[in-house]
Length: 397
Image (cartoon, rainbow, N blue to C red; front, side, top):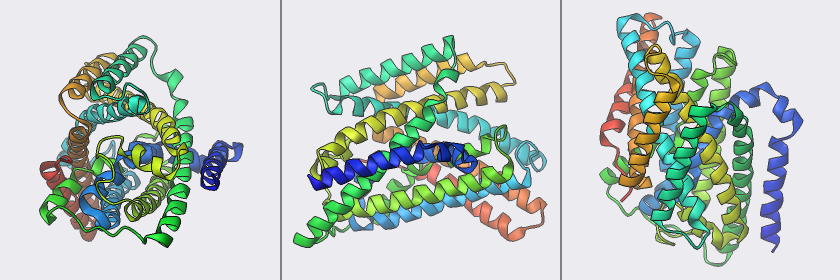
């Protein structure tokens, strides 16, 4: 009972803090909310159980490596923002890379929206008598059609304010989850000791699985596209801040999870976190479900809007936003009925890795133009890494 009270109290306090007027007026926080919401919006729902199942006690190290790779790609984008390389790419090759990056990001958004909404469908039915893959897919399809209807008839302006409430719910739920896991670990460690399980896959299988999870730390790149609202310095600082905050959250979360639960504790599926956290507190499944539904819907609307804008911009108006929404929804529904969530996660990771590789190419060319050979070499290495992830990433089995 005390644990439940502390979880609920922490979540409520976190929600009140992030929705308080001082936080909402803080310009840095407002700039950081968009990338932070994208990074933690869905990753924390699936990442812990996936890593624990395959890597066991090595999961925190894998999480740290994922975060470092994301920080590297984020550094490349931040360098290009500071150098003014976006919109003024270095040379013909830079222009080609920027065009390709725009189209690749639009394509990545198509897959990421399918990822978000398939998670939404799974969580929507998880605590109901209708918990079955078919029903989850029906819910996902219905939400896709709802988004298409709103986008085509009214636009998404009325839904844009949802983001700050969705990320607030998410952060509050995460605070409650971390407190609950911390208390649960303290109790179990005192009686049975921490769970220390070795990895269950080969190093190569671990690496390719790792590559297939990049999308769980994706989202920081959204700061690049907020130039109409914030200056370059604020976008750079808020992107870095979002990555630092999300890294801290992920590391604490994954570490506590693997120390509390042995691999195989419950079935590994897209809502495995619900079954695990029910052991910690009967409140957590409901709290996480509400946060998941809000976060996935908000993220899907944001990425649908982003994809439509990118397609309209890159096609120079030949393809309008509404036509892009229709293509995105058709592709998303197709993915929903032909692939599971873990496969979609892998597809999204590989698509975003290709986008990050192209951004690293832009940063490489900008650094070379500035005579910074060391940085150019580092960004070139990131580009190669992005290509490797795009070609080698695989889904959870």
